[in-house]
Length: 330
Image 1 (spheres, rainbow, N blue to C red):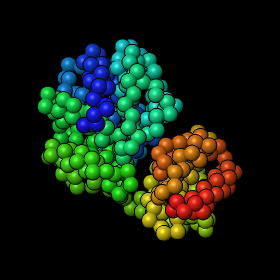
Image 2: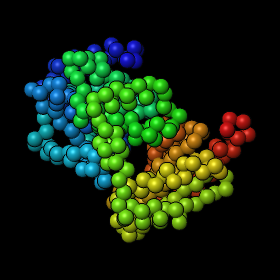
Image 3: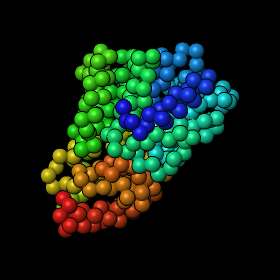
């Protein structure tokens, strides 16, 4: 257990015991960690406190639902609880929470592993050195694991969060504690191949066509940056949603002459271009914040208002790479 969090964990448990209705929120355009935390925590709450009303909020994922996670039931404003505890997971700031009704809660609790740029909760439990928020949720649950044990189903969801945000334990944010937590989750009886990985990474022949398009359209700047752009016509022709535009980012992750890579996907409905940036060693969240985003040092997101901003973004990234190379940092 993270010792410095123990007092805060007890305060969270006290809030849980005090409220009859608990709603679990997470960030928009969810990834495995956001959904794994949300469903893992909500499942544990339902099992541990059967007399309480446990709800989840947010949009379904276009492919992870229902392949790995159940549908999230829509709740109208008329039926939404008036008195409730909001627990928000894996979300650094309020603008990214995927249902702003969390602001109506009597009490807000924040569990997160992003830089704590906005401590919006009454209780904020943030450890940005963790590879996933799912590790933090498990650490909290372990406070009273004998009294409130973790079920196999809840463990499966949390494992998907750990595996997803750690890149299946490949990223440099992974520590020995990551493996310890993964081991504890496996002790519940989950089959990580059948229950998790096959569901996480299942592909269709249409997915291969998307990958083919991306491979054929990757741009290499020659100065350490690579990227691909999916315009609205590409999104429609490939029969994907803008939220799926970043799914092929990993194609560039192991290229020896690429230090920073990204996807840029047009979202015509929102009149913006979704930006996802990844890096091997160079912190890129500062530049992401200049383009309506932010995130982890090596994994960030943002938004472009126009594709005309792309040359400036590429230039800033190239200059950052050059700076780090001149200083001998990479």
